[in-house]
Image 1 (cartoon, one colour):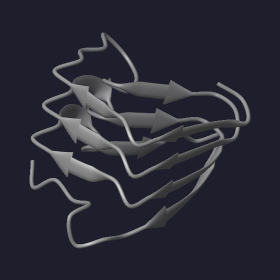
Image 2 (cartoon, helix red, strand yellow; image 1 turned 45 degrees about the vertical axis):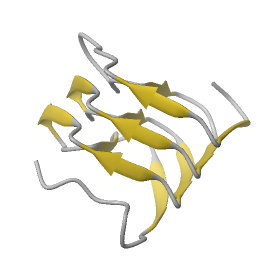
Image 3 (cartoon, helix red, strand yellow; image 1 turned 90 degrees about the vertical axis):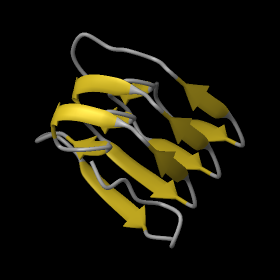
Length: 91
């Protein structure tokens, strides 16, 4: 995705063989006010971006990854992560 805004969605039980169980982006993106529940991937259980992304106000619950946890920002990207009390995974 490039220049995309992903907002107010629920992503549940998605599985990716490689990057981002629910969302994988290689272009600029805004990802906000979504629910990510039980997604999994090798890099980033819920979200993996290889570009500039603003990730804000999302709810992350039970997402798992072999690397990076719920959110992964790849080596070609930079992320602005706005934390929120509900925006965290403990896995």
